[in-house]
Image 1: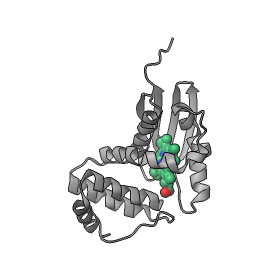
Image 2: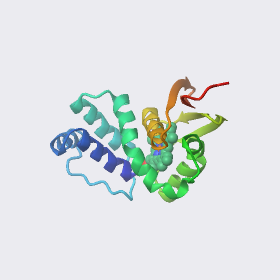
Image 3: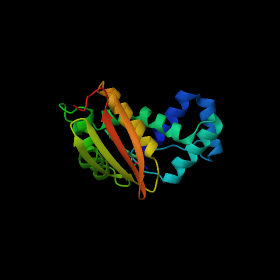
Image 4: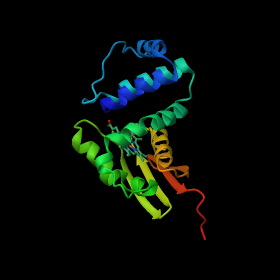
Amino acid sequence: MHGIIFLQLQRFIKSAANQEVLNTIMDDAKFRGKFFDATKSYPDEELVAILNSACKVLKLDQEVALEEFGKYITPSLLTTYKPYIKSEWKCMDLLENVETTIHKVVRASNPGATPPELVITRINPNEVQIDYTSKRKMISLGIGIIKKIAEHYNESVTVSKMSIPNGTRLNIKKSGVGSK
Ligand code: HEM
């Protein structure tokens, strides 16, 4: 996983607690003093170890923590990948293009980065379906990203999820829009 994600996870923990607690968590995960470089990639297991320790020390539910972390990283993801986000897009347009535009660029520009292969369908102007299959099982991170993207566009959405073989299907609907 991308070094940016590690750096952001450390920042997220620090903002939820403080530097001392972050040190305790890094100690617990056996990574005290380790420096993560934003231009490099690191094994997924290291991210999971830090996340697990954070949940243990801060007594957080893992899925809640992942969703909050997803929300936390979204503003910087939107800034980093701004050149690929069309100015006329709204929330549903960006979601529709995450795989073909954004994750594709992430893969091409960061050797070693492997964002999930999302299968995205625009059901109608106000609804997008995202099928997530990844061995990382981090769908809650994706849900946090989606909610923050909606907030960024001043839109409100409802996100529902169901299981599919080897993964999860998300249905994202713009709320406050009638079906008439
Ligand atoms: C502007 C929008 C987005 C950007 C810039 C972005 C970028 C990224 C980046 C840089 C990573 C790290 C990949 C790695 O290091 O291997 C990642 C991973 C991930 N992305 Fe996205 N992403 C976006 C939207 C989304 C959305 C809408 C979802 C919804 C499902 C999503 C789901 C995930 C998940 C779950 C991961 C963790 C890796 C995994 O589970 O395989 N992303 N994304």
